[in-house]
Length: 126
View (cartoon, rainbow, N blue to C red):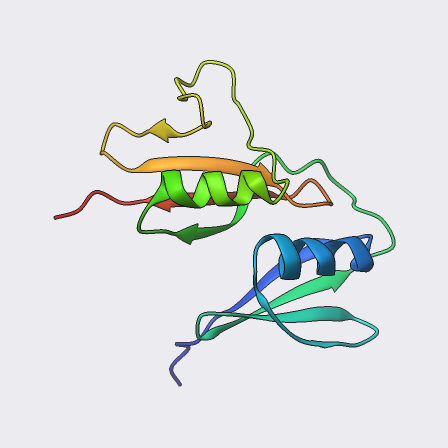
């Protein structure tokens, strides 16, 4: 048995706000909704946003991210759509909130409506 096509999961306590955020601000293709989850297409993968009554923990790590070709362009487009990028104490982030890793990747983080931490990463070109 080979496991080769992952399904992505994130949780929400407000499906209406989450659908609007992921569909309108991030531009993901909405597939369906049932009593348990919202479903979006992310490239060739499925993102299931699970419907919860309450969140049981304060998430302090990235739960979902995207590799992008031009992080500055993507950050500015999302900022124009109302996405606010996070700043972390002790990390040198530029005016757009982008941090450069020691390995050369550039990363920016933001919250979804349920405070899940999402990220964008531009990897160094070889």
